[in-house]
Image (cartoon, rainbow, N blue to C red):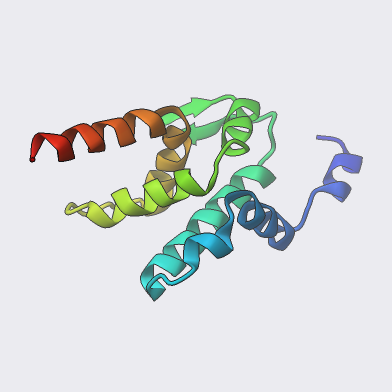
Length: 130
Protein backbone atom coordinates (compact mmCIF):
# COMPACT_ATOMS: atom_id res chain seq x y z
CA UNK A 1 0.00 0.00 0.00
CA UNK A 2 1.38 3.41 -0.89
CA UNK A 3 1.83 6.28 1.56
CA UNK A 4 -1.01 8.09 -0.17
CA UNK A 5 -3.35 5.13 0.40
CA UNK A 6 -2.47 5.16 4.10
CA UNK A 7 -3.34 8.83 4.46
CA UNK A 8 -6.83 8.43 2.96
CA UNK A 9 -7.85 5.28 4.87
CA UNK A 10 -10.95 5.90 6.96
CA UNK A 11 -10.78 6.07 10.70
CA UNK A 12 -12.16 3.14 12.63
CA UNK A 13 -15.06 5.25 13.87
CA UNK A 14 -16.11 6.15 10.33
CA UNK A 15 -15.72 2.51 9.29
CA UNK A 16 -18.06 1.53 12.13
CA UNK A 17 -20.53 4.21 10.98
CA UNK A 18 -20.33 2.80 7.45
CA UNK A 19 -21.08 -0.70 8.75
CA UNK A 20 -23.97 0.56 10.89
CA UNK A 21 -25.52 2.38 7.92
CA UNK A 22 -24.99 -0.61 5.63
CA UNK A 23 -26.84 -3.03 7.90
CA UNK A 24 -29.42 -0.65 9.32
CA UNK A 25 -28.07 -0.84 12.87
CA UNK A 26 -30.86 1.40 14.22
CA UNK A 27 -33.50 -1.02 12.95
CA UNK A 28 -31.66 -4.03 14.35
CA UNK A 29 -31.41 -2.64 17.87
CA UNK A 30 -34.90 -1.12 18.03
CA UNK A 31 -36.77 -2.73 20.96
CA UNK A 32 -34.02 -5.28 21.62
CA UNK A 33 -32.42 -6.29 24.90
CA UNK A 34 -29.06 -4.81 25.86
CA UNK A 35 -27.20 -8.06 25.11
CA UNK A 36 -28.49 -8.13 21.55
CA UNK A 37 -27.67 -4.44 21.08
CA UNK A 38 -24.11 -5.07 22.31
CA UNK A 39 -23.72 -8.07 19.98
CA UNK A 40 -25.02 -6.05 17.01
CA UNK A 41 -22.44 -3.35 17.80
CA UNK A 42 -19.67 -5.97 18.03
CA UNK A 43 -20.67 -7.30 14.60
CA UNK A 44 -20.47 -3.78 13.16
CA UNK A 45 -17.02 -3.41 14.71
CA UNK A 46 -15.92 -6.68 13.11
CA UNK A 47 -17.26 -5.45 9.76
CA UNK A 48 -15.38 -2.16 10.22
CA UNK A 49 -12.17 -4.02 10.98
CA UNK A 50 -12.52 -6.04 7.77
CA UNK A 51 -13.25 -2.88 5.76
CA UNK A 52 -10.06 -1.31 7.12
CA UNK A 53 -7.79 -4.30 6.47
CA UNK A 54 -5.30 -4.13 3.64
CA UNK A 55 -7.21 -5.68 0.74
CA UNK A 56 -3.96 -6.84 -0.84
CA UNK A 57 -3.36 -9.19 2.07
CA UNK A 58 -5.30 -12.37 2.83
CA UNK A 59 -7.93 -12.38 5.57
CA UNK A 60 -8.55 -15.41 7.75
CA UNK A 61 -12.06 -16.86 7.48
CA UNK A 62 -12.97 -20.25 8.94
CA UNK A 63 -9.33 -21.10 9.47
CA UNK A 64 -8.38 -20.40 5.85
CA UNK A 65 -6.62 -17.41 4.33
CA UNK A 66 -8.86 -15.90 1.66
CA UNK A 67 -8.18 -13.10 -0.81
CA UNK A 68 -8.66 -9.79 1.01
CA UNK A 69 -10.46 -8.20 -1.94
CA UNK A 70 -13.00 -11.02 -2.01
CA UNK A 71 -13.61 -10.95 1.74
CA UNK A 72 -14.17 -7.19 1.68
CA UNK A 73 -16.58 -7.52 -1.25
CA UNK A 74 -18.53 -10.22 0.57
CA UNK A 75 -18.70 -8.04 3.70
CA UNK A 76 -19.95 -5.23 1.46
CA UNK A 77 -22.99 -7.43 0.68
CA UNK A 78 -24.07 -7.80 4.31
CA UNK A 79 -27.54 -6.52 5.18
CA UNK A 80 -29.69 -6.26 8.28
CA UNK A 81 -31.06 -9.73 7.59
CA UNK A 82 -27.57 -11.26 7.60
CA UNK A 83 -26.66 -9.59 10.88
CA UNK A 84 -29.95 -10.63 12.48
CA UNK A 85 -29.39 -14.21 11.33
CA UNK A 86 -25.90 -14.25 12.88
CA UNK A 87 -27.26 -12.78 16.13
CA UNK A 88 -30.09 -15.31 16.29
CA UNK A 89 -27.81 -18.25 15.58
CA UNK A 90 -25.15 -17.07 18.03
CA UNK A 91 -27.80 -16.71 20.76
CA UNK A 92 -28.90 -20.33 20.10
CA UNK A 93 -25.40 -21.74 20.64
CA UNK A 94 -25.03 -23.98 23.64
CA UNK A 95 -21.30 -24.66 23.25
CA UNK A 96 -18.39 -22.51 24.35
CA UNK A 97 -16.88 -20.47 21.52
CA UNK A 98 -13.27 -19.76 22.40
CA UNK A 99 -12.36 -17.24 19.70
CA UNK A 100 -15.60 -15.33 19.40
CA UNK A 101 -14.28 -12.65 17.06
CA UNK A 102 -13.01 -15.21 14.54
CA UNK A 103 -16.24 -17.19 14.88
CA UNK A 104 -18.39 -14.11 14.29
CA UNK A 105 -16.25 -12.93 11.35
CA UNK A 106 -16.71 -16.34 9.75
CA UNK A 107 -20.44 -16.36 10.54
CA UNK A 108 -20.88 -12.95 8.90
CA UNK A 109 -18.92 -14.06 5.83
CA UNK A 110 -20.83 -17.34 5.50
CA UNK A 111 -24.21 -15.67 6.02
CA UNK A 112 -23.95 -14.02 2.60
CA UNK A 113 -23.74 -17.46 0.99
CA UNK A 114 -26.30 -19.25 3.11
CA UNK A 115 -29.10 -16.91 4.19
CA UNK A 116 -31.72 -18.28 1.79
CA UNK A 117 -30.86 -21.89 2.63
CA UNK A 118 -30.89 -21.04 6.33
CA UNK A 119 -34.39 -19.62 6.29
CA UNK A 120 -35.70 -22.34 3.95
CA UNK A 121 -34.36 -24.93 6.38
CA UNK A 122 -36.01 -23.15 9.33
CA UNK A 123 -39.38 -23.05 7.52
CA UNK A 124 -39.12 -26.71 6.57
CA UNK A 125 -38.24 -27.64 10.14
CA UNK A 126 -41.11 -25.61 11.58
CA UNK A 127 -43.62 -27.07 9.10
CA UNK A 128 -42.49 -30.60 9.91
CA UNK A 129 -43.51 -30.01 13.53
CA UNK A 130 -47.11 -29.19 12.61
